[in-house]
Image 1: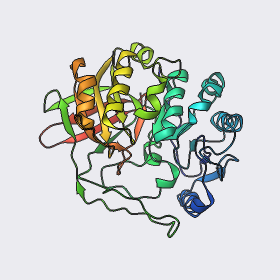
Image 2 (image 1 turned 90 degrees about the horizontal axis):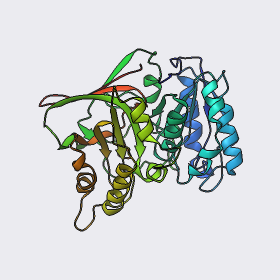
Image 3 (image 1 turned 120 degrees about the horizontal axis):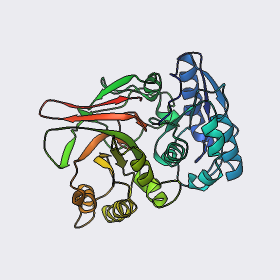
Length: 341
């Protein structure tokens, strides 16, 4: 059984900590702006000690793990969100107190990229839903109509449903210069985009429980106790899974190998479909990113839907790990509905 935190609402407390990369001084203007943005929405916001400064990590691993454990088991905290992702937060997942997290009042753990390491492990080890959505630094950006920001998705009550519709345009390559101006809330979305069915019928409606995240940081967990999606799929075999995956920067050959490894570890044994996020990662000489997915996953003979609105190419949808979702693709519709049951 998947358990869901209470709906997030104004007045609730959001804790900000960096389980992975900390916020360097040059980006702290954006951090302060994003913290104020949340407070202006009516949330109480507290900062952790593992947040400002650091190198590729915000603090020593024991300190980061202790702070995340404390926030996830504090009944006064309704959500925990990092400033952004990073590279090596795999170092703390065996230091989290999953028994205590399981026993505590459920708290929303939010984020994507390297943070999907913790999202996956917490959902698989505790049965607690987690939320694959914007990190804090991106939270102030407006989204196109039809996409739900994480704090709206987190307001959905247990048993409730929210629906998101595919974006028609994505952001071109590039980033805002937060050192020069830390306050942007809009981004250019001027490149046409559309979901693509790489394998399976061109029109489909398919359901299952969502589980997934970033390929680069999750594939090393395949076959471990912290990435046992095979067992999660067996537990929810009556619903089946919608495994969603996105690539940050690895080349197509590396991605093909990672996806084959995840397949061999049983990640797709109970999958009804595989959902792939948009990526700007490079193709290889003889293999595109789409080819990599087909090479590894087409033999499963389940639908593969690519270029969906999640991952490292904005705009992003919110996905609830463990939530029951239905994806619809036909001539006139591209949408995903999620029910928290």
